[in-house]
Image (cartoon, rainbow, N blue to C red; front, side, top):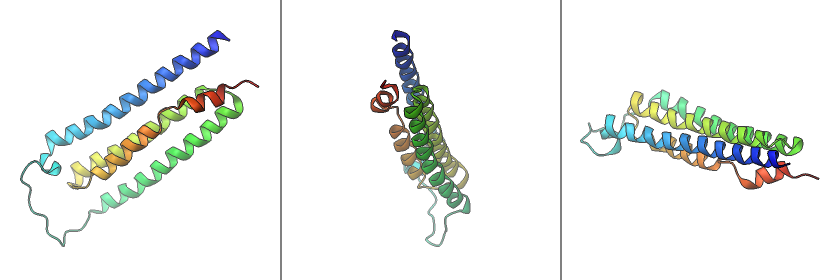
Amino acid sequence: MQNDDTGTRVGYIVAISICTAILVSQFLFLLMIYFVKPELMGLAPSQSQSESERTPEIVLVLAVVSIVVLVASFVIKKVLIGQAVKTRVTALIFVASIFGCSLCESVTLFGLLTAFVANYPYFYAFFAAGIIGTILHFPSQSSIDAASYKT
């Protein structure tokens, strides 16, 4: 009984650590844009964009893919947590959280791609969605309690 609680505690600490590292990396990507492309951050003079200039197709494609990935991350997490509660395997909760955080990081990476490839000034939307999604995917104590509850 003691080993099961210890394993759950260690798994929780590991999952929190990995999710935190993913969250920090997203802010580091933002810092990378700050140093490499300061004009996108509004900190350096930029070339004026004409009103007729349209959004590059890659941005639209990545926006759609980002929405699909973001929704999929929450669906997959819900399925895995349901499985964890049903089978009483708390490790699935940690897998769900880390997997969800990783998928949300990909949304941030799509934002990084739009900044570097398309010089898209609204890359912030990708970053905001990725960071908020990552925060929402951190493992919760209530899910762990539900999965470890013994009847």
